[in-house]
Image: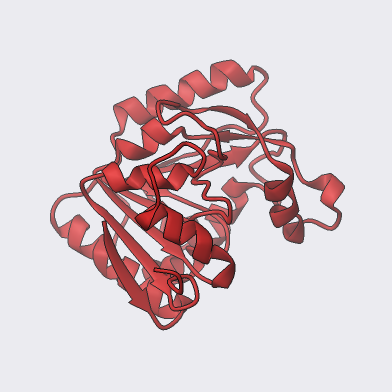
Length: 233
């Protein structure tokens, strides 16, 4: 696990983009993508560049259960607004938030991941150490499934909604085993509220109580943090 400390989120986005270009030059074809505020500067770097993504495939970490792809709070909409509208890929996969049978949708998405092994996976980290929506206690062997969001995650996501009661209570999420199958993982974390989680991920015991700690076992992980998130390292 390599840790890179940057000045701020803008610099972090530039560093992540340089890592992406390096892997594209080495033949990466499948990108694992994330949503939320953490990767926005990374996506801005891609959009502003002359990099052509039209021959690539993307798979997203997660999607809310119950939201359509054109709902402004869906992750499909986020990806369209922040990347796909300007830099379309050959195919971009996300779970279908309106699937009639969630269990079947999870199986379908696992098959997509099996057919499209991830070369370059972007991650953020939650204050409690979650990656994707794999909350504390999630199995390291887990694959894509429907998860119940914890109260802390619902509260953290409430800023994107007019009312916390509007925040979906469930989501589809890649499992930790899906994430760990990625060839390269780049995790970004910014802000003092992430410092405990970052410390546990890098230096703590590998435990399902802090899901990101499993990344210590991965062969190619780069962690990009600002000084606040790195404060306890």
